[in-house]
Length: 267
View 1 (cartoon, rainbow, N blue to C red):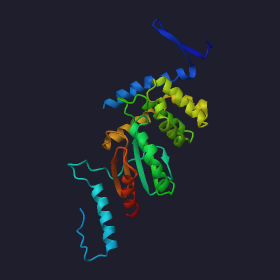
View 2: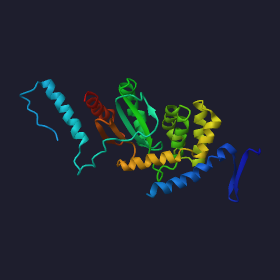
View 3: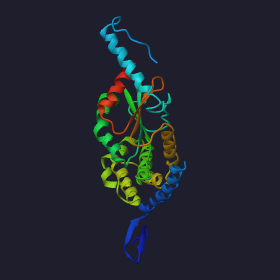
């Protein structure tokens, strides 16, 4: 065994050797324990169809539908804040796009992966790639059931530091089954391999990942999400500061997003 290897052994188990760079990933496990503790501490007017054209009526009804979505009765759900903060989180798409989807997500969540695989490509094709919508990704790792979600979120933030958030985001979701059930130290090693695959500065990435540099940023996302009433992932808020935001919960199909976005774009 070389000087760069670390030996773990016990009387009842075989000896296991791992590279020192991988061993540094164990720091993440300590940071996760801290994060877990932090995580758990804690009117419209009436419309007369005889006085307006069918086209105007359709337009008015569409706007009314949007208002009804935005102003749910208190018995159904809390009134949403007018502004949902994007913080300084990664953006997919044109930062100046008029409509924003703010996603609170967990990289280890299977429903988040379903959204990534089934729904997001359609949103990209019809709206994001056309400059009409942008997606803001905010972290909401549910550590109690997804122990590798927090280090995965750190990995994505570290990739974002090098301008490659989208590439790491896709790698993590596309290959979720490869790392989601692994021990954290092994998952961290896999994330390092993803950094190699997308041609990041390896030393810079590994240093960022093993230090847990973005833990505070991720915890802030968690706190904001709880303030907005997020209780599970994925959770979405669609809109802008002027129109307000409509909440969507869970891995909704494309049509659910389209229905809201089209009305907002016409508002």
